[in-house]
Length: 296
Image (cartoon, rainbow, N blue to C red; front, side):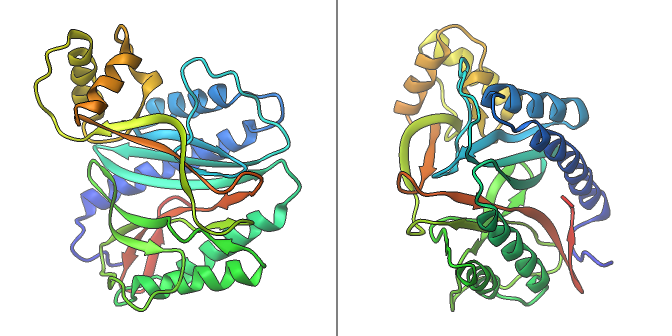
């Protein structure tokens, strides 16, 4: 199976990251049940990733009901799962090469919404290949989700993954568009349909627990400097959770670094209150005859 300009050593790192991710995601999904806490599920997944790979590509996202992305528990979070729609989104890296995948665990009795995202992902994967426009893949996703009577989340998209960059081009929309990027052999992309009972547009909520390095520069405050040193040493440009930072007064330091433009924050993205969102995601390598799913 040809993967074109992507050399075999690099491709193997992507595959190894994908294999670890599949194992951890399957384990973690089994833990999602009423009474379990978001924090214990997230910490289990992240600890397993560090046991089996070089690290997390981003903090484990645990999005519930109307939440779609960027939800991750705080350091002292004791929130328990209830009768909810739960999306788990995890990332693994080997030497900075990233695999990204997501599943939805339905505790709410809305299994068809989960099926809509999963079938949309299957249709998208069938469409992937060299020369295919990303807008064509989006059309496949949209057709399936609307066929179920739901709406795709229109302002979220799939994306490329590169070394130390969990979210790069090309964007792969969740709706059909006439303009797009033509996929090429060797591209590594994460395709992630979101289906919702709502309007299909998410907005920023008030919660924010995930950050990444925006620009590195010297800072005077001692606690802020300690946070920046840990970020540079352990996470580089990859997103991290505030609960991962172990220096004194770290939460205050993180906010100070954000205000100075050193760190970028990721607020939780959510649909309207009372709506539900499901998600399904795989990372693939584009090949001459379609794609290789590395997170399967």
